[in-house]
Length: 273
Image 1 (cartoon, rainbow, N blue to C red):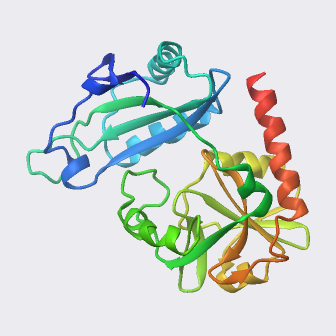
Image 2: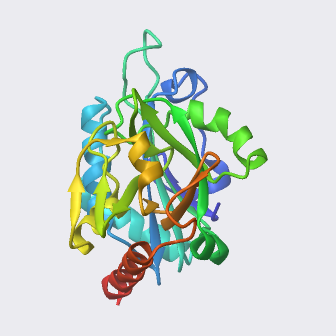
């Protein structure tokens, strides 16, 4: 964590940030967050992240006592005070202290500045392994703080040589625990349409790619795909070359995946230029 954060309505030392022990964010796991990167001290795709954060607050019935303009200003000050050239900013809105310890209340807004390490170049060159996991994330279209199952399940990932999981239910895949999912078949991109968070990186990929079909995708189609990859703020675009113990396509990152990754990096450079 960087030295300064936003809490209690002002910029304070990060080590001084506190939350009430009866906040619903702690006792019920109820809250929202969002996370975006800074590149050359510029917040990448900021307006898209603010759109999602503000919408998440509305959908979870959590009051957000700051306007979009105020949030922009707070973020700008934090980037400058923390000298956050290439890092990340995490916005968290807690569920609040409720009279009945259950209903959403007036929560507390935190904005933290963080260091950020992207995946190793080896993962982009060689691809990663995912583990299939039968699960549907609750209210998937909202970026909630409830990551209980993947945090618990992650103990297995390292042991099995996996980067993450791929959720599926009744034979249909949705997303990874912190990423959106794509397959490539005959040069065409396909991505799931249900039980997913509408990722900001996913949104940029949909704009970059020429041929994308948004539709239900079966687990069997993943194993039969030519290529696959995941997208997220912190991973950008990682080729997926193995699901469980079966390889996908050639078992190496494919040309469509690598081409989209390069185009996204070009878009990133143009955005912060």
